[in-house]
Image (cartoon, rainbow, N blue to C red; front, side):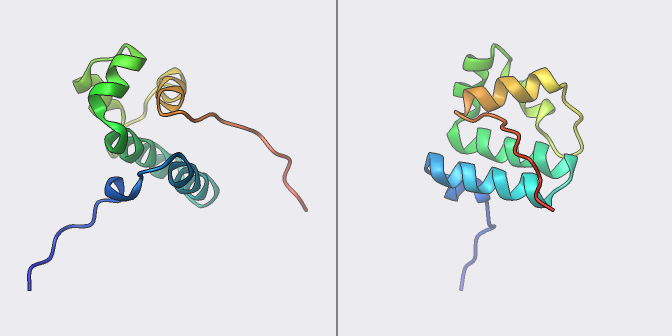
Length: 94
């Protein structure tokens, strides 16, 4: 029996799935998890497309969204906009 490596990007095939994934990571993950998740989303949509929409080069985009990277907030915002997302703040409930 042959197996393949799991890649979450293969399952991020709709805006709703992308939103659910990112919201789950935002709720439960840490800074590194969030950057990695945004990288998965960018990969699912296409790094070339995201690079064009952000004005970044593909190598810079890969570097900024790689595991352990510490991208600038402006980079995160550019990528979120390019993938069709946004950050929204909701009050925490007690």
